[in-house]
Image 1 (tube, rainbow, N blue to C red):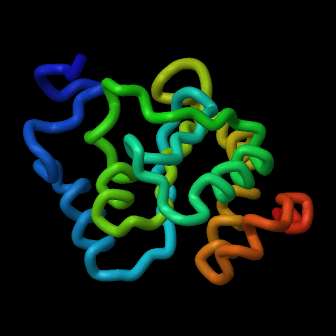
Image 2 (tube, one colour; image 1 turned 45 degrees about the horizontal axis):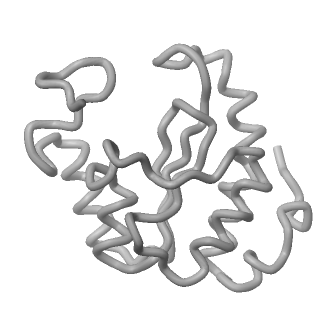
Length: 151
């Protein structure tokens, strides 16, 4: 269920791109050519990787790489969340891989003390995502262990 008014969580706005931050991300994306996008959220430790039946080239392999790098589960976007996210729009608009990374578990908002744990779980996604932008097939074929974690 979508909340009827602004609230700390679950409010998606009165209309698409109605919030200034949504418009800014939209405009920024339109002004650049991205090979893939990562949309970070903080609840679930899961990766959502496709939009309905749309599965851009290499998106499943990249999703598997991200799951192995982070330890997060791969899941399909829940019905009640479909059509509302940046990832969904990006996949539909560009037919390129998009991922929603749910990076935490517990209370919402997550306490700042969780940041080091989240960082450790996500550094492989972030470095793998950058490498994917440079060479899509190589990242899919090699495992996350081949890309050293840096601090």
